[in-house]
Image (cartoon, rainbow, N blue to C red; front, top):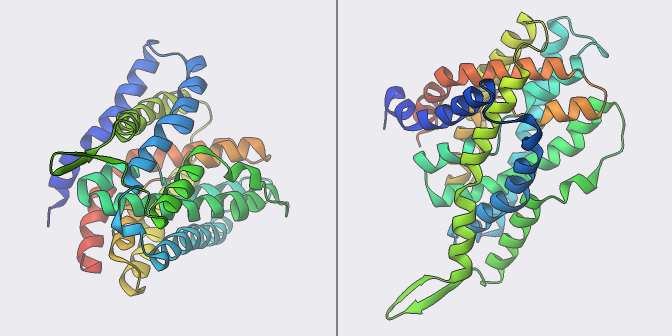
Length: 320
């Protein structure tokens, strides 16, 4: 088992990509007006290709019960996280209309996409990667149902937002796996090798998370300094996201009879900082974006220290 230093060394490129994106935005080499076009490309083309390339042919998602476990726990832990964060927000003095809903949503949902991908690649490999995307279906469902109802105070769920590129890619991938149509290979002598379509998909997908992390750095640089620093948002949200909720997830990993690949995914999820999507949701549904920004920026910076520590502890605690 690698120590925290070894894991940090392997994961340092993740943070360096974010840092490079932030520096280039700071010196004006990248422009904010280009972000939307790049993010649309990543979200609707590159990321779905990456998802399909990892799901197709993976044995970890061939068993229906494993898929149900992945979606179920992907939904459960963010909902528990939002509930715990709602209680803690009250203790910190937040009230409805003053950031309590935004605090609960942002601290409750971990970064389940681009930052998690390279971590899982380093630690666990293809089987866990395929399970990550199944797990993320549950997270998306939690965020766009319970999360939206929490931040908006309404009971209507914007189901159409679940019909996005990554979700469709996961569903298509699982369907192809279930039908055993997921090889996408051709015979070269006695060996089966990826066909032209699969290789094209793989090349497109390879740029998904590096590009996303790079743009994330620029977006975070734009956020810094926009609002006055708040200890209860930055410190309170970070402690919750990087200490309290990880322990809840790791207890679930230890005692739930879930597939091994899902447990591997959940250990990584426990180490993740806050997701960036709640910033958008706070803007869309009348929340307090400044609170979300502080939690996201602070937890991302602090995760440089806590992420390898949580991974080492989580693997030892759960026996993986």
